[in-house]
Image 1: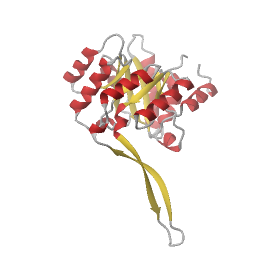
Image 2: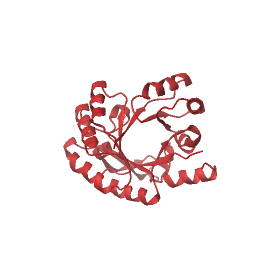
Image 3: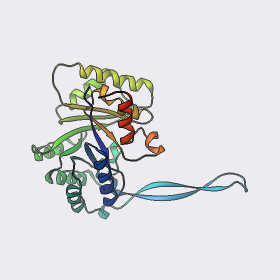
Image 4: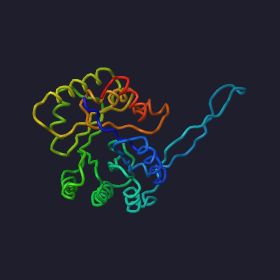
Length: 266
C-alpha cells in the first residue's frame, strides 16, 4: 500500500524557533511542513508551582504555560515572507481560530486577511476551515491559482456514527483538493467508527479528493500510525519528543517511520 506523505507541524512560538524546526524536519526527510501561524501569538512562560505536602516535604515543580500576546506584536507580512524564503520544501499555511482549537487572538476579519496574504504569497497549500463564512471562503478560493492547493479542514469532537462521517466527507469533498477531518479519539468505539468509515471511502469506485482522517487525544496516535490502512494521503507529525506529544495523541516523526517499518507498511 502506498505510504501517505508526512507533514511535520512546526514547533515553537517565534519565527526563529519555527524556522529552526523546519530545518530539522527538512533534514530528517519530511515531505511537507505545516506552519501554524496562529502559534506566533503565544508566549511560552515557565511557571513554578509549590507541591502540597507536610512542612518537611514541600517542594516546587516547574511547568510551562502558553500565554497569549497582543495582536500587534506579530509582523504578519514580514513573517510570511520569511517563511517563504526560509522553508525549502512544500508547506501548508494554517492560521487556526480558537473555535477550532487554534490560538489566533483577533477578529475573524483579521484572520481572513492573513489567509489572503498567504495565498497571494504563493503558499503551496492553504488550510481553510469549512466553517468559514461561505462568502468569505469563496473570496479566498477565488484567489487560489494552480500553484496552491486547498485543504478543507474540520476539527471537531468525537466521531459520529459511520453514516454521518461519510456524509461529512461528501459535504466537504467539493471544498478542497484535500479533505482533512480531525476527531477527538478517546474511546475504542470512536476509533473503530473512523476505521469503518475510511474503509468504505476506500472501496468507492468514483474518484474524489484526497482524504486525511486523523485524531487527537489518547487514541490520536493510532490514527496516524495506521494512516496507510485508513487510506489517508497525508499524516501529521512533529519533531517534538516528549510525554506531552504522546498524551495529546500526536507522534514524533522518526517514531512514525519506525512504526511503519515494523508494521511493514510500504
